[in-house]
Length: 310
Image (cartoon, rainbow, N blue to C red; front, side, top):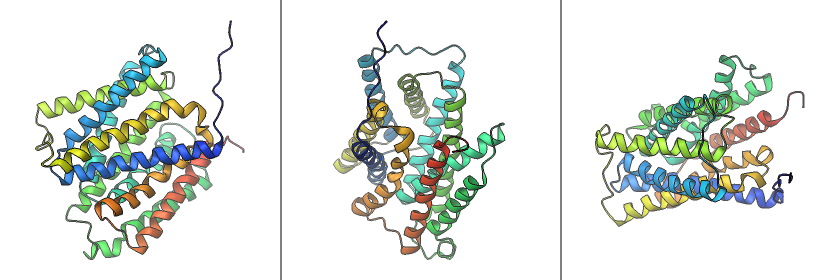
């Protein structure tokens, strides 16, 4: 029997460069989504375009890998639950992006590792260590700076009239994504990554079609009002599909256990792109808070990767 070929990791500087690029693509997807919403595109239309393009790419990937989309026994129901959760996460996050600055929406949504750690503990896993709890507190402390609560409460910051709703949607996205990650780790670990992602995106796409036909979200199927909106819609689909698909193609060679925290460039890139494309700006207090949050998320990611006792 021929021994399986093990993919050799790329040089670390190249792996980090690829992950930085992919994180920036994910950020560009969200900035493009906000631009599409500002130019008349409906929420469901944006997710349909994104999930449809990703579904085509994942289908091509499965064909290229010659991998049959088979589900191991006992995993189908959990796969359906995961797909529904990711559909909810997509709706919540894009709803947040449509209401508040993109970087703020992503910073709040990227607190899902805290929720995942607490959920794992609540469901019988190990409790967070003192170090992990301290990092979680640091992230929450940074979020207070990002929100600039005193100024926000006094109405001195221009986050728009729907900032509370936007923050709730962002936090909701973090909650459902944390549950989805728990299911992925504990119930669907036997399912190959490309197969799991194929069915997840298929459920998201199907869910958006059903929601659109049922007119569950008023205006959700509205098409862009101008060429800029259409360009943003196409761009968000391309950027997300490139980033999402490339992760599966390059993941075996990116040493993800060591380099995954680099993907936390997404909120930073969204801050820069939001300023360049949308004119969204943070004050000094919020920038300091954002730096604290991102530092905490990276520290939390590294601490989760180390084996016990390391």
